[in-house]
Image 1 (cartoon, one colour):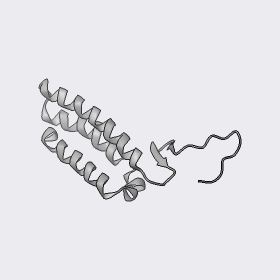
Image 2 (tube, helix red, strand yellow; image 1 turned 45 degrees about the vertical axis):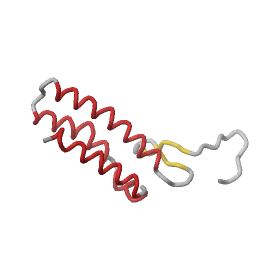
Image 3 (cartoon, helix red, strand yellow; image 1 turned 90 degrees about the vertical axis):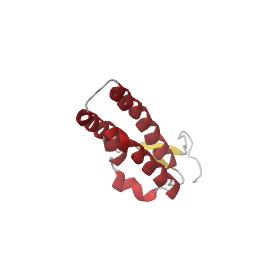
Image 4 (cartoon, helix red, strand yellow; image 1 turned 180 degrees about the horizontal axis):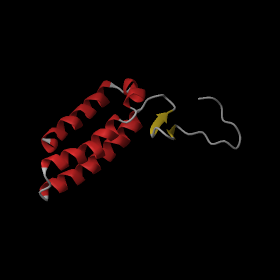
Length: 103
């Protein structure tokens, strides 16, 4: 990291507005993938709750796409190439978990 400038606080990570992307000083996106994973897990709970209350599959699919899949895919072309294989596997595992809910 460059040397600090007086009166300017240096941070290891910042959130880029407009994209919702967490950019780390190391140019890794681990925090971004973790943040999205937490968001999607919380939203998955809502979908499972709606399913347990008898919501029809067609509506569940729409909600799942709106709340979860759209969040995972938002700006993916800009950050998807920068994540490690480990995080790619985590995203794929999460998507495979969605399959029983959406069908």
